Image (cartoon, rainbow, N blue to C red; front, top):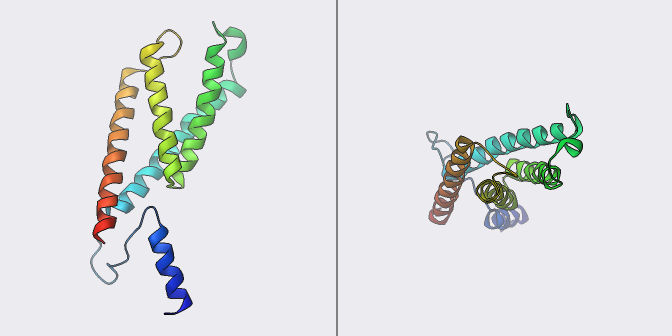
Length: 152
């Protein structure tokens, strides 16, 4: 076995998301792993945009959030979400497992804060519902990609 073939075999075993190349020369077949990567990249761009929106509230405010906030927790939450959304967006774009985990933690934290402390932090119900649907879609795509990888 050549060194190149050993390296390729080792790399395929270590991949988290494996995009099969068994379809060369055949008609295009849509794989769940490919859809998962596409989904993660699209959501990564959306979360990077959300993060930039948070950063614009911090760096370019019409009124300083640190002066006009009714409590000290609101600016801290904006900074927290600016950082976690940016990290989750980058991780999702890279299609890495830690990006998906960080994204789920950030979405869950935002939803929990909305229900527990609505006076301090609130999100529109439509946004919460969309986040929940996106999380369920992520779990489904992740499961289908892992089943596909096991079958390959």
